[in-house]
Length: 416
Image (cartoon, rainbow, N blue to C red):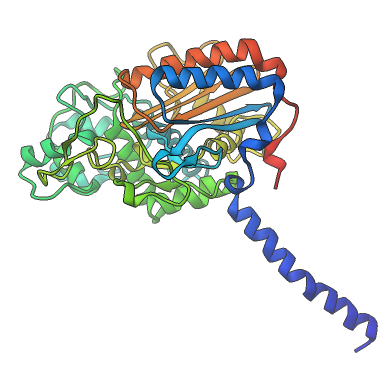
């Protein structure tokens, strides 16, 4: 073997560790590379002061804000405490429960299966040709056979919360159906489909967490993978997001980098979700967070969530993981009563909105037609509950009006 060839082989072998290092950096992702110090901008200190004032007014312990313009992450900052008891300040890379923002992730997962022609939006959910037809034997109302995948996505399948949301009333479900332990998704579906629908599918819209649990089960049935594994491999990782997880129930279940959650000053302990008789904080044991699955269980950071949004917005800065037509289907405006696919609202003026609220968490995504996107997630309940997102949306409007011209022209997505 010639000296030249030997030297060339030696050089190539010596590069292997660098290749491995690059791969580890990619898997590590954004959360370990972006810090508050990168968004310490003198011109935007008045904006930070307004956010601090907003948090004091609503007694919010911690919040994370990310701002994107034209698929470039231009601002990312944590405010307040990630874990006050441990003295840990909030950073952009801290991960938090995002509640119903999880529905956007689930809808993206459904669209990937749709693009692969593994299902259609018109595919029936139940019935002889339905995806979940193993539950047909429990159905007593023929209207179930009219439900399509799109009905579940648009909250028009016929489910109602008038008697309470079954995803947030586990103890009541256990009593009603004589269950000794909390139901898993299979048992819950068996129980709930035995009840009649509130209206004929496709004729009305009523928000349904259970509908998105069914979509999670559809992803599992069609893909042959667990819901979490499918989404991580085929949605999140492809978008450059590596630190999303299906969340746990208790403080002890938190992931590395996950925040502590807080309630309002007047919150009192409530009975544990599983009927144990124990009293627990509403945000740590009041509900079975994990069982929400694709309806509300994901935890992640604002910056990785922004990266996901950039991957499904139809703009050229970040490569999309969906086709332009799928992006159009998800975001098209139909009428003021119709939900988007995963987005809670896609308005006539081109604003896309996704909200999420759990005890201890509030999340909001606002994507504007000028290409700016603002995301904020907090780790604290307020007495306004789901209505708090309106306060956050109002804050975004004021901050955009005053500070958008001062946002830096940089791209934190390219830090790595």
